[in-house]
Length: 116
Image 1 (cartoon, rainbow, N blue to C red):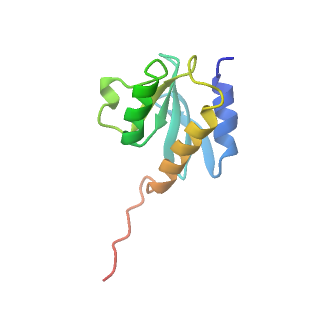
Image 2: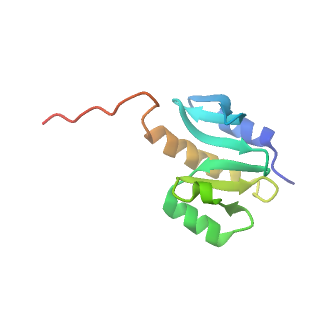
Image 3: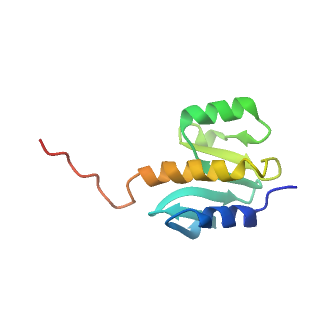
């Protein structure tokens, strides 16, 4: 059974402090204003926040599902084909992206300087 964006929506909204919106004109989900997943409907894929080391492992293990384009080469994102991703892998994938986004400062917030 193929994963649909409705599956993604339900899982994303089940995570804490998630807002639905758009990014580049497509449906997207953010936590504390930080993007963690969005739809690339032009290629039927998700753009998912990821650790760069994990990204390499994922692409090596399943290049038909996980891939990047030159645009994402130096960015902490991976493309995930909706038609290929396993439904049981989706919750962990979104949770990982959500956790990475939650660690980043919100847009417009400057990190506090440490006091000595």
